[in-house]
Length: 287
Length: 250
Ligand SMILES: Nc1ncnc2c1ncn2[C@@H]1O[C@H](COP(=O)(O)OP(=O)(O)OP(=O)(O)O)[C@@H](O)[C@H]1O
Ligand SMILES: [Mg+2]
Image (cartoon, rainbow over all chains, first blue to last red):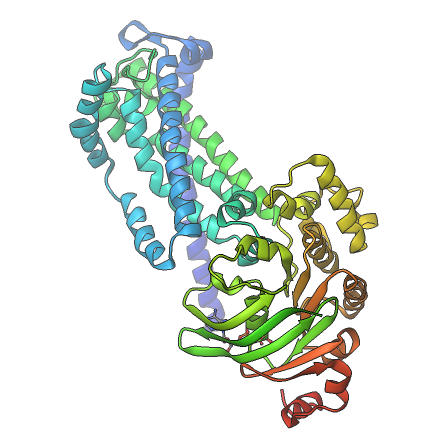
């Protein structure tokens, strides 16, 4: 074996070990969460976890339904805010704005993703929450406030991935449509959006993953009360908030119940990611 | 009768003059071929006729183009109507990634024809006019990208036929096709000229000689020579045309 070949082999082995350790760290975390969280779920029954309304850890009642509903409500709320805005923004920047404007605005939008979530939360507390309290009533700390702030936080994800998938649509489709006498908007609606559909769906699902996993900003503005909200002006607690708020002092079964919360969150996010991957792979196969 | 009259047409991409004072008349229901070496402005010229150059930033045009006696560069000219009337077939077949059905009725929808019955009539008629109906009538819902290259190019022509244009602009429509497919498209052009005026850009000299009645030779933005195809190919007036045709250049 020559020296070069030996080097090549060493590098290959080293990279393999590094790759394996990255995967195994992930595996260890997963196993840890599941081994800590699942026993208590089975001890008290999956039903009481998923459908129970009361969360009194000191009295062995671990109902997560209010938090599951809380997470789902804020996540969908954030999509209601983020998807129309994000998509409109992406369509404007790719189809209707000049190349110059796009080159200036896209990096700025991506910069928004770099702002720490505590800053978003802070802005929510200082500006949005008082505004909601004064104009719409209620405590201000609410589903609505959390949805709006999360909606803004997922904008960069939705916009930049949507822009990428819109730009990946071949120019020949645009030309073919324009040459048939279509307007830009008709072209966008009838050809470009269908062609970019899978990328846009992936962007929405990734944004959704970001919203459901967000913790700090939500703790600061959602109110964290454990109840099923009757209107968007009521406060809620999400699954992530539940873990973050109580982990500091929890012990014994309480602690295990928080891990169980993590397990449920983990499963929800896995499902979302699988859907995202499946749609983008299917989209590629169609092209 | 001339359907297209081009007078003193010049086009600039920024400071670069891509077309220099072009004058030419295109006869109705005839095939006009444009030949010339790469980068001499054939595509640019073709794109002037349906104003596709409008999509490019920093393009400046002088002179006039009249189609059916209307100046298409006049301010009040109906641009979308122009593109309906003057259809374009591209070098690479570019069907939309939609079903065959949606591709053919696309132009109808764009121009506000949504009646199911009319759409289905036009669909059948236009697919028949490009001899694609028999091949695809059982899979109208299939994605158009699953067709072969030649079928895709036929579909693109059917897509134009559905909106009943008067002029077809074809920019090297066969360059992505094999010789047999090319022959089929050429046969199709023969039939289509009964209905349409066709202008075709081609790098294939034999193709120009085979299909066209008139030929124009472009060189570096100039229309060096324009006339009947037989005359151009047998006794060109300009020595530069002769050089090109005999292969001494280009
Ligand atoms: N969008 C553009 N911006 C600037 N210059 C351009 C643009 N499009 C074409 N040109 C230039 O204009 C000239 C003519 O180009 P055109 O595409 O019309 O040539 P062509 O005769 O169609 O060539 P080909 O046979 O290779 O298709 C070329 O020099 C080209 O570089
Ligand atoms: Mg060209």
